[in-house]
Amino acid sequence: MNFTSLVRGLLLSLFIFLIFHFDVNAQLRINSGYDLSFTTANTANEILENYNASNPDALSPFGSFGLSNGLLFGLRYEVDFLGLEASWVYRFDDEETTLSEVNDVTGSIKLSGRFQTFSFGIDNQFDWFSYGGSVDFNISSIKANIDGADTKKLFLKENNYSTTFYFGFNTSRSNQIRLSFRPFIKIPLTNIDYDTLDINLNEGSTVNDSQGRPLVFGLRIIFTNG
Image 1 (tube, rainbow, N blue to C red):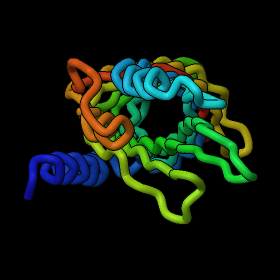
Image 2 (tube, rainbow, N blue to C red):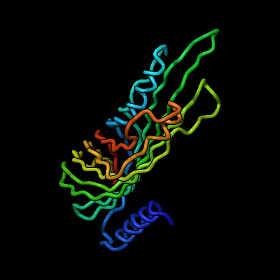
Image 3 (tube, one colour):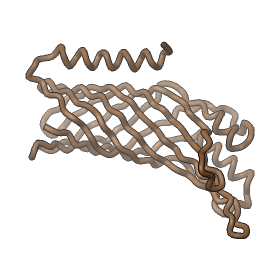
């Protein structure tokens, strides 16, 4: 068993233990919602900029990775004012360049960024206000669709760990649904190595340091039943 599997197994075991250890009057609820994030992906964007610089005649150069959005699902276990949460977030961020258009044939590269987060957290909730944090396991992958091909090529797949802190502004429960607005910041604890993205895109290393720790901040809108 590798270190990543061990950490995920321990987090799951801890969550199950807490569920059965606390008072039977506690409540298990379901979270679902929307995540809007901005990532300071400086290393990845430097790689895209280097590609643009080497292809100055491109009709439409790459933009930059930054703004992403996605969905959130999870479980929330409440004991009085204390909440324990296990969550999964899946975010999207795509960038595309158009290199040429000759005889109705378009040369292009579309990079599809997919970012998953598995987290275990705890918060204090006081009526309309709450605050909390989590420990996160993140999977970052970028696939490339080249010239509209049927299959995509994997340019990057990396894992890293982070910790997230947030404030929550909550509505009162009505019709068994509670709405929470959570501004948050996610601070990376380990690096992401972008070297494979650089090599696949630029056919070689073009950055001095391929290691990056992208900071993420944004807003989550969460619906909780019960």
